Image (cartoon, rainbow, N blue to C red; front, side, top):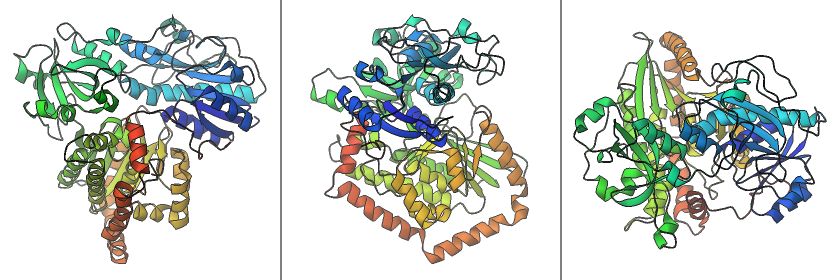
Length: 613
């Protein structure tokens, strides 16, 4: 296969774009990125980079004809062959499709209707659109894209005949079986032709389609509607009579709802971890996120962004009862933090998960996580697994909650940033000071910025092979960073390696992170079962940990490091630089944060991505 020059054209450098970028680079291709800012900019990028192939994994408008008529352009569409339209995955979640797929097609004058170069299928899970996008859609997109790129690199210049193989779906991905290798279909994906073949052109899924009828809709229906709009655009509704978009919904348990038997559908009942409990006709849902829907043209409409629901409506939510739950509880009882223990006495493993929305760790969330860490350290376990969340391990400080502080009287974004980074450091310190047992960060999902360095605070880091890490801060307005990274990173990579990693600002695959020593274990098995495999691995370590002498050696290393240079010195030095980021004359961080939170379009492509410039 001949290496290709591939231009990645995307609306933003999102999780799918990052994964494809890193995987294609690892395969030996030369990559450059151009954000879809204007047709003239795209045309200029093609002229400058002279790509063999343009790949569009995430666009919100058509590629200009002046580009696709000059160079082959392949578009990644989050729907099976035949599906067309801008809301492919939204419709699939809303309708409860049992199976879905991803298609790589060639751009032409028809929207999502060009020749199909490759496709892959997958069974759906009951999850949000964002969760499906980051896991199943990304994996299927990678499979189909690599097949299409390999075909193109092999000299083919026309899409193969579209074919489907026979066979029922099995497991997490399409099962092995016979298929025409020229079709680009995932092995055994013939069931897609029956069950998940696209429905042709599907219009934009509008708010009147998603609208919740609280007096009629079941919990399952409410969840499907909110999950279909997860991330963007949300579901237009109202809280306390104020129009807003809802997101991040979770089913309430029967035991929770038993306390509110007399409530009417639509009633707001309680608060937990910042989420609002709302009654449905047959149960209830916890609503974690909300965004005001102020009339266009009003000043408040310009400041509308997602926030923790109970914080956005702080005055109203204060009148609702708090319903916290213990760390150890039944599996159907939702909460952001959860703890379980496994294994026999003297060989026990504790698992602490912290599933924060989009991996964002606000000051309040950091404080709850630190308290949980201190609590579980009282237990007699030999190994503690820090599980993060299913979609993200952590992405560091919560930029949305910091932005909210900028709009509160008597507060500021700088003050909120300072409080948040101090709280993040407190969590990292609690992990570093857990010296009486083995600590392991388990990356089930991506990790970025301070969240990536929080993971390094543990003794070991295990990641699934699908994980993408962004272990750097500079993309957010040239932040210096904290979370004891100046201690944690050099002890793994050395001073020169740490400096190089922090400067490169590019996504890192788990396999590459393992190769350079940033993490300790890369699991290349199926994503399904990853948690179980990690638990088995941890139980094996727990059984020998006491006898190995590793615990004493670990404590001795920490004491030696502390004597050489106390952790407080690292923290002081890092925070001195962060204080200048937050309060200094250079507003880069605040500008970048504001643009990120408000989803403002990019004015240019960062130079570390656009190597052709």
